[in-house]
Length: 194
Image (cartoon, rainbow, N blue to C red):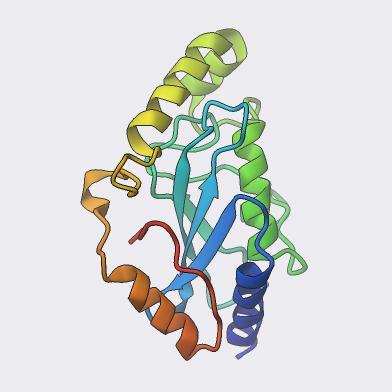
């Protein structure tokens, strides 16, 4: 019960006062199955990209961190090809920095910061980390190329994600109905990250 009421408050806060460049919503009727979008930061190789994430909230939340992964492919030293993220806020102590006072909004903001400032000393992808450290120009070119291929909105107004994630035009209204059912109002996202 604590998890559900806390998540409702967090989703309400995310819809009324979202961090700049971040949106988050629940999928269908499941309040513990969320999607988020992060806009790539200005001046980074991810600029102009819209990156979708999947968020699964465990039963013991907030005493356990949410599980987050990128659905949109991203070329980054701390994010692997499956979208898993190497970040302290997503792990319990002693190896991690998660604590119950953190919330989904703060974790998404810290992931947005990680996109801007990768941590090559704690990589998930050693080859990309090496590139970032020793051949920054090549890293930047590859990261921009991936952003262009996977995260830039085309003239259709739809983000091109991995091909199996084609957007369902009915998804936005389903999300809106799910939010309204939980008395949370939010503008429907620009793309379904289902």
